[in-house]
Amino acid sequence: MERLSVVIITYNEELNIGRCLDSVIEVADEVIVIDSYSTDNTEAICRSYNVQFIKKEFLGYIEQKNYALAFVNYKFVLALDADEALSEELRRSILQAKVSFSSAGYSMNRLTNYCGKWIKHCGWYPDTKLRLFNRELGWWGGTNPHDAFIFEKEEPISHLEGDLLHYSYYTLDDHHNQVERFTDIAAGEYFKKGIRVSKLEMYISPIVKFIRDYFFLLGFLDGRAGLRICYISAGATYKKYRKLNGTVNSIIISRTDSLGDVILTLPLAGAIKKQNPNIKVIFLGRTYSKSIIETSDYVDEFINFDDILKKTNPDQISYFKGLNADAIIHVFPNTKIAQLSKKAGIPIRVGTSHRLFHLTTCNRLLNLGRKSSDLHEAQLNLKLLSPFNIKYNYSLTEIHELYGYNDFGDLNENLRNLLSKKRNNLIIHPKSKGSAREWGLDNFSKLVDLLPDEKYKIFVTGTQEEGNLMSDFFKKHEGKIVNLTGTLSLNELIAFISKADALVATSTGPLHIAAATGIKAVGIFAPMRPIHPGRWKPVGKNADYLVVDKKCSKCRNGGICDCIVGISENQVYNKLLV
Image (cartoon, rainbow, N blue to C red):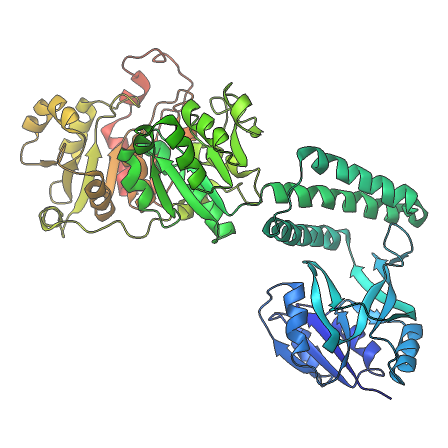
């Protein structure tokens, strides 16, 4: 009688592995288990059977099985999954074949147990598999997760009587979970091979599969279980193709407006990298936002739209083509960028259906209305990841982890020396360049008077133009505040904010910078939609805000906002004390 090696791959298979090993005891001359670092009792159970137990990081079903072949001692191999077991008839057939292996390989029918019922139709039976083979004549191939042993040339194959019993799913949740896992793997493998499907195929294929499996392959004869299997399998086909169409190696995030908006867009880069660190993230911004974008660890490359605009139109298209991007996300709608990305042939172009020019330039349209939404701007931005196989439904308490800010740069000696080591360094940013309703210099002045000198050192930031508008404010508080308006580059502002203890501002870029750096950030807001804090409040682990609890839109057409001005300096001070 010839010798036979049995190879099994495992990961957390304590429910199945004992049954599998029991079934091969009579036929195996050695058993080799390749385990992907199970965290349950799989290893202990295996060692009680005196098998060769080898740990190997999971690289793919095909890769694991080829790796296992390097450890076998005999020419013929029986390869099993841990949730499989030999029926008594199949065990006898293998023992008979072992007398003298006359074929290069041996196939067998696989019979699946689904939630306690043996399935004889739905395309699941006989489900013939080549599992016993001469390892010297081929290798494992196929497309993950559907592996197959492939002979180098045509070889004789015999069929063994008896079933390979497959205990696939104990519950419906098991089936759904495997569908998610296998469709992730399959979509990734298809993408690597350059396989693509049209939208029509994505929608038609599941329907065709259900009709084939349920009617032509007699799935209805398996009763309710057959209906469930055919329905879930059809859904798996759709999921596989949908994930394939959302699988990418590189994504451009396009946001070319103000700093606060850019900061609240950076979590897209973080969400992408959390899901797949190998995806290249390219951020398309403007000159003034370069520093805030490049500071994020989650952005691989910054491209400057201002530089692109200096090129001729043909060169602009060539530039976009040269980025070799698989997708672009139009977070801030821009007609020029949308047209260029289409002309450059970027395969996936994501935008909202609320912009008319997106109807002709984007091929992934989302019905994403911002003005009336109850979601925060950062959450709305993240929803633009929904066409991809990437998590996007983060809570506000999770989003601060997606900025990618760890190193904010060093301050020069002069700026370092300005910071107090004994007092709280507080930055106030009174102006907004018209981007938000303002609290007013009178209120900031009252706050400065209220703050104890022995506890706070106060800095004022803003542009030079804003500084000129605050000349009387600076004269009134001369000696108590440090005027930094018009003196800091964006890099210096980011670094200075990160080294301070707190910042107070209305809905401006510096407020969102402070929140992202992790310092205390207090925002002062008007209650009116769409500029209310529900949409624009600072998002950070130490961020907070103030707003009058009422519905009001008196200042919708401009002018002073009584609601925001009515917030007292004591309320702001109390927020700083929290």
